[in-house]
Image 1 (cartoon, rainbow, N blue to C red):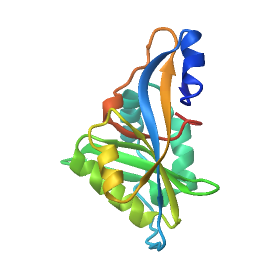
Image 2: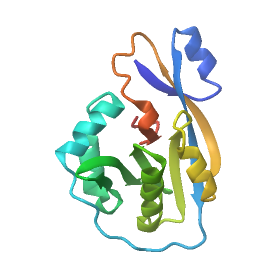
Image 3: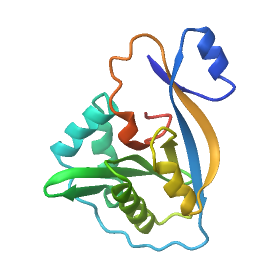
Length: 178
């Protein structure tokens, strides 16, 4: 069992046998100007869904298909020599565009995906829920003027049979989705 705990809730869940898996920070960017360079992203392919299962540790293909249908212009896939080196999705929230999941095999790919997301998003407010254990995500959003909004801890209880590869996950989809 996994959940995302606030700093106030973390001690409560620890008493119930939950352990910390990793920390998540919501970063927000409030820009005064938006560039509306909306164009559809690539067609969502089965290889992206297969890689996401491995990295996230669970099958969320239905959710990702739904995101691609609702905001196709925010689906981004980076390839090098035919191999997927990164991808990201976005969703249109009630207050802001949300970037996530955001996955990259290296900093350069992560940076290209973030920059392209910022170009394709048409909202003034953008949220990104970065994983602290990722070596470049927080550094990249901070360099673009994002500000820290809140912190959460992904916690688990029991055996972590679906650990995935969170070190490749720059940002989660959001605490309400995983």
